[in-house]
Amino acid sequence: MAPPGTATVTADPDRVALAEIELCGELMIAASAADGERLSADLIDAVLRVEPAGR
Image 1 (cartoon, helix red, strand yellow):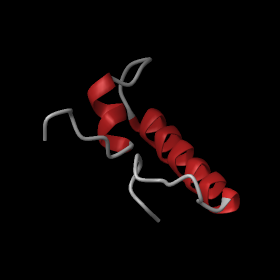
Image 2: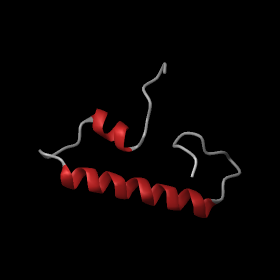
Image 3: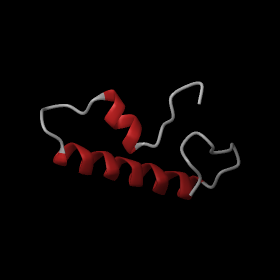
Image 4: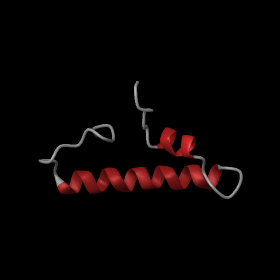
């Protein structure tokens, strides 16, 4: 699977849907393990493997 943000226009819709489901699952797992009511933006970025701009 390609890292988030590298999908192309010609991507297979089924593969894209599966990748989205996987990322949602990872967010749910992180949310269930987190202390407090909300995930921080930094933790969400880490779970989704998002790099800060400029790296």
